[in-house]
Length: 326
Ligand SMILES: [Zn+2]
Image 1 (cartoon, rainbow, N blue to C red):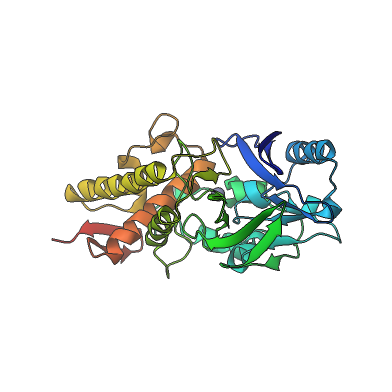
Image 2 (image 1 turned 60 degrees about the vertical axis):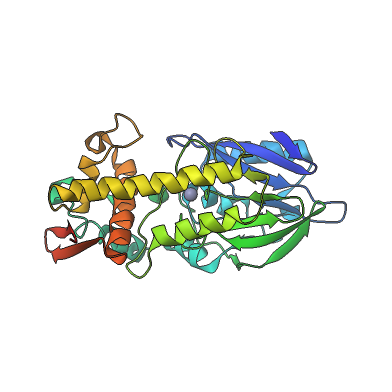
């Protein structure tokens, strides 16, 4: 555990089996008489729980005195919250993400996830099992009673005044906690150093890449000195990193267009033709857990291109076949 600012601590929570390696759980210690606030907590497993509880002991705090704010639905942020919930604390999350966290316990959630495979053109023999999805393995064990929060919600703790900010894109309901006066934000997975946050397709009603890019641009207008991110290093060159991420997605869109220039392709075929900064760089070598994220990321980019009318797609039974508009 390390102290970053007055009353703000970073608890390193190990993420066994995940290429992310570690989650930064941000702990804001309340002033005398105040409750504490923990932001994100880790997978639902013993290693994560031990790391969090050891830090609580060191800080002289208990979960009864500590509320939890979950930036977004991913299991590395939320899985542990059921073990940390007591009758005396609250778990804050935006409603659309909270519903999905409890949804991880239902068949209907995973049936919907499985239903993305045919449109992406994944051959039957190659279809990943939902049990390989990280959110399946590391999810909560029983439904959790969440307290809904939204863009504009405010909380004062530890001498800080935080305002919840809509950071949707990485998930449908990601929120950050913005300290406007002190020019920093606890920003979940919206902007990460060295790794590019995964942008998935979550449904067919929204253009998640466009939402993400819009919320990247928004953060640039906030004049932040520091992002307390959920993985890897704290970011101090905020605008420069946002520019890099924006450029990354522009390159990805170009890459897809270049592939489609030489022939129509499904998401499955695009994923094989694209270059990846993971493992060997070849999608064919990815473990099933990473295939879920990679394919849904390609799908989000392809659907963005379709919405801006750069490409069209024929919805064939063997997969949606994308082609360039000329
Ligand atoms: Zn995430």
